[in-house]
Length: 227
Image (cartoon, rainbow, N blue to C red; front, side):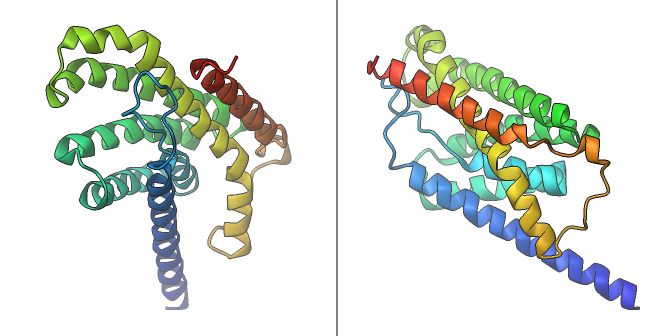
């Protein structure tokens, strides 16, 4: 009986923590709507930081949790602040889903420093590819512009935007993952790690994250004509 009660308590804690992740993802998404566009050529494309929050939740609690958060946050966004309706909902689910699901699946299978980097890299590539297809096939329909116009923007605008967006979110995940996990363990939401010392999340991954952020910042400045 005591064991069942403990499991129930842990389950309630997990749900509560996922709710916090969802609230944080939504709050960051809301604030980002007021930021200037990353690529001036496509001002309607806005950077959305919710992906890095959801991918961390997926790293901690698994791919199913990442999928649930993706759908819930996207639904709330559609209901509260989005003006693109069901099409915007589908776009958000595809964009975030193709980033977080490959990443969390790979990291679940290979919970090492290499696994963390590879998972986020493949998630970024996956998201970029699916959004290029989306922009080519769907964007002309709901923006009522010729497909040729959108096609001309794929390489000079849509591709760099999605790569920069994915790079920023991957970098933020590398920087914040370990502190978040430590906080969850301190709160007894997660058990202490049993991973061998040589396979633990390496100290240099946040440094790599900072380097990637710096590269993304330089790319943004280049596209804005600062350099």
